[in-house]
Structure formats: C-alpha cells, structure tokens
Image 1: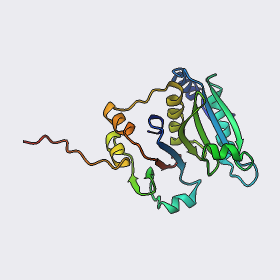
Image 2: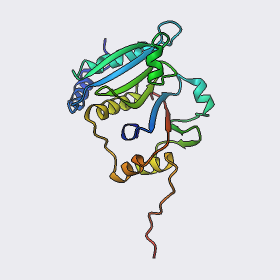
Image 3: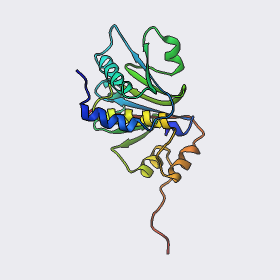
Image 4: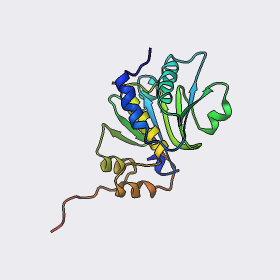
Length: 143
Length: 66
C-alpha cells in the first residue's frame, strides 16, 4: 500500500511535470544496525520516482559504499543526496522525508529538475556573493 | 541556497532521528537552523530575514531617513 493518496499522487505528478533535467536521488541506507527510517525513505523515493521518468533512485550502502560516502560527504544515514543532471546540488536530507520534510524534498527535486530557484533577486545576489564554505543545517520534524 | 552557490551546502535533518545532533545543537523547537556551527536561527523567518541571518549580513533599516 502506498504512502501517498491517489489525490496526493496526482498533485505531485502535476508539480513534477515542470522537470526538464534528470534528477538522481542517491539514497544511503544501512542494512544492519540501521533504523527503519531507511526503509521508509526508500518507499517514499520509490513513489516519487514512479511519477516522473526523469527522477531516478540510486541506492548506496552507508557502510560498504565508502567511496560514494566520501564523495558526497555523507556522515549519517539514511541520507538523500540530490543530483541535477549528474551534478551535486549540495542539498542533503537526513532521515525519512515524511510530513513537512516531504515538502522540502519535493521542492529540492523541483529545483534540481528545473534549474530554477524561486528567490527574490536581491536575496539571490546576497547568496551568490558568498565565497567561503557555508554549511547550513536545518532541524525539523515530520509534524 | 545550496543550489545557488557551490560554497554552500544545506542539510535538512530529522531532529528525532538524530538525537545526538539535536542535543549537540540544543534543538528544543523546530525548525532550528545552524550555520557554520556558530549561527543559530530559531523558527521560520521571511526569506530575506532568514538569508541575512544565515549569512550574518547586517540588518538593513526599512525606514527611509528624513
């Protein structure tokens, strides 16, 4: 049984129809010793990917795939790395993307899939002026 | 922000899943944003306020001077 209702699926499919670039969701999970949220994350990503041919999932093992873990600087699981046409967007999600976090994931997919960032031009200027490493961590919960 | 600048990385973290991190950053309410281990932003803010706070930009008075 899917996590998304038929109505939610239709709405999501409509939003994803704007995607023109391939979006790869690289999912790191831990088979042994990992939490159940990895399975939930996998199910959610599967349902999203089923709604648009340009969205694909690549599964990685958090323990065994050390090269990819280092490449994407992933230090905890489950983790979702969002790629836009093969390029790292530097957007990460840690934990199962449920509730409010699901909205954030969909927005990240749309940014990655359209290349469009819906921010005020002045805000974009501030952001694009950043020239030092800046690590942003946003903590939230599903509800 | 991360998609707009290669110097920026952005992590969305489920607070109840990663309790060690939540304790480390004293996450008692969400959303809570940590930037470069030093800047803390509690709650949600309008776009410009959030970006100014996250990038530690000076406040700009909206009131025109006489």
